[in-house]
Length: 105
Image 1 (cartoon, one colour):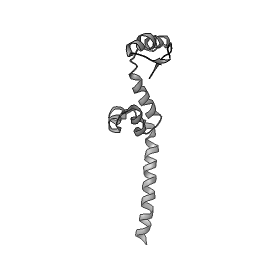
Image 2 (tube, one colour):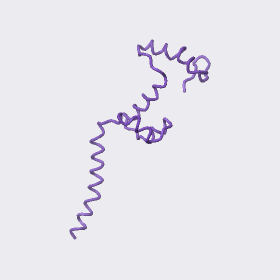
Image 3 (tube, helix red, strand yellow):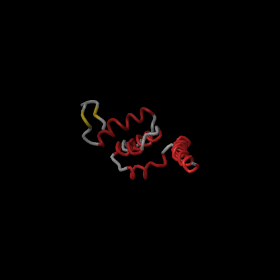
Image 4 (cartoon, helix red, strand yellow):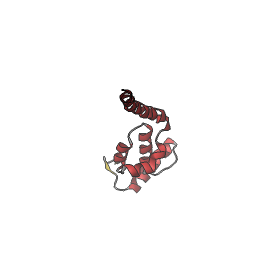
């Protein structure tokens, strides 16, 4: 995923990447150390908070949708709840109005 900036090639080992680049850049930025693997979680939660579809997000990470939701469902943004409920209500209204009109006739 990351390339050695000195060689322009992928790092030959995760340890070399962490020692030579990752730990140093985090320290310079004032960010506490975390494993590069944790960036997957940051990417996944960022996608969900941007309201991207779970199916797309799962494919990005190489997960099934079930696995992705089991791991990341808690990060699905609650601020979308009103929008999602409005979609449902709109769909139900479209379905029930013609049915009610038909039963009156």
